[in-house]
Image: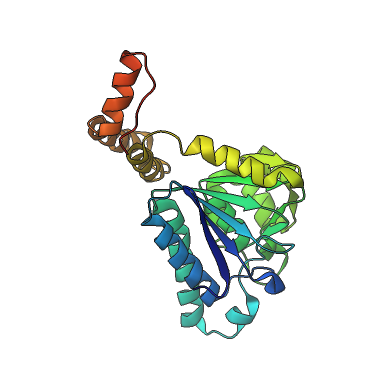
Length: 255
């Protein structure tokens, strides 16, 4: 079904693996379109989690310069719009999306990591916005990275273009865990299992609302969160969770 991806369903988890190892999993228009289609398909499924991984020695080297260089202004704008739509889709689907990062994640590859809900990195992983030392600055990759690591760290990453190691990425808040390379799959599965437990409907609403309020002023964020939390109290999952707590029993989730 896909030329540039491997998609596998295992229980409640869909794993989407970028499969352009010969091109360092660089993001051509065709590759981005397949990623968008795969995430949309996963989003309409009854899966609870999605893992984004990369085949070969590199997680993703970012935009495919061969594709970019062949485009005029309108063509590059269309490419970046497609990439942005993918990032929004990853955050808007109801499933928990977790990045499984090994090797380098640079430019739009780093953008992918920052756009996932969660990220686990191998000790060998590295992260960079290399446009700062080249000719095409990493403007769009910097958008979700800024919202993960803060202003001064973003400036260092974007202006120097240097690679930071996995330990630094953890300290800066770009990833949730760093583990030995041979424990990467186990660590991804463990974090995903904890992040997907409970009511599916409640989790889906929670994810959407978190992104909706995250970058808004506090008063606006409370206005959004208050209305959603009030509505969510009437969900079957919320009712069951409260009843189980009050009755001192294990909940039986209806969704």
